[in-house]
Image (tube, rainbow, N blue to C red; front, side, top):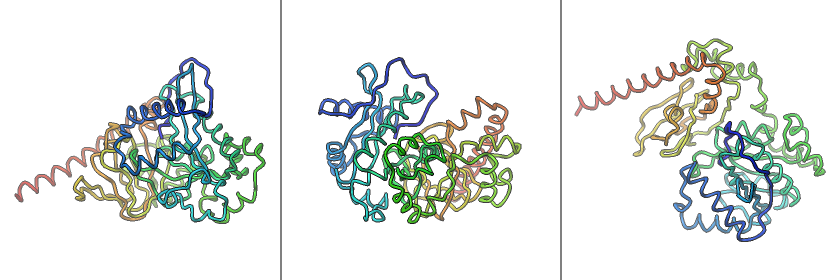
Length: 389
């Protein structure tokens, strides 16, 4: 999903949210969506398998499409449908764990995906307009649960508006690792507690409190998990200390030399992600600007031939090259023992550079040392291989 916010002023022009009503409008939406995916994500829509293309075409035809326009041009779009419009595929049923929702009518389950906002508009209220319109449209269709997915770096953002992580499954799409998430549209208490933009809309739509009660009974871990976006700095620090079983300053090389307050400020907008053994945290050639701090578990770094390049456990920083350079991954990162990781993005780093250059200088120095150690280890391996040859 191309929805990562950037600090850019939106161009002049009044935004309007509309639903596509004819083939011409759908064509304009598809053209806009594909262009953004190609230009910004490096995804070529025509590389999909024939079966996948056919499925996407059928889903596009049966779904409802919202689009944002400004001065006649499409600047954003979003696709959604309920299960009674088009049945979920087997992959969707597996990834979203839909077997747990079989007692509900198909129209209770809506699916929101392919939300794309033009780069120049992401710093405006455009994403909020799109999500609010999608919420109202899905509820008018009878939906009570909305399913979507997002990359690890955006989990915190989706949690802020009311979605929850609830499934142990992960989607490995063209855009890389994607996390399934659910919005319980009737959970008024939760939406109000986190000040979700959906809270007032949910009240106006006459919520079924029995749906929220069912979710809490059937997904207690997800329902009771503290929303990471609401953790204050002190609670986040305590959480990391608990996970690392020591003061995080002494458990993560990235934080070496930082004071308590400096590291805490850096972690203010952090997101954590739970992974199962066998999950791929990163895949080769995927565009990414994320690095990961291991809070628990183990991962392996593997090259294109599947050979193990390195192993990392608690406290290690992995994926740092793509994080610094925003370049395609040169190796895949596979979880070998159930793990929890802290997700760091370039946006997080740029924010601290602007607000706290002294801290950012220390972090950059630490990242340089980490890269130097990795280069030293790689050089030693190559030297041993050459001598052995």
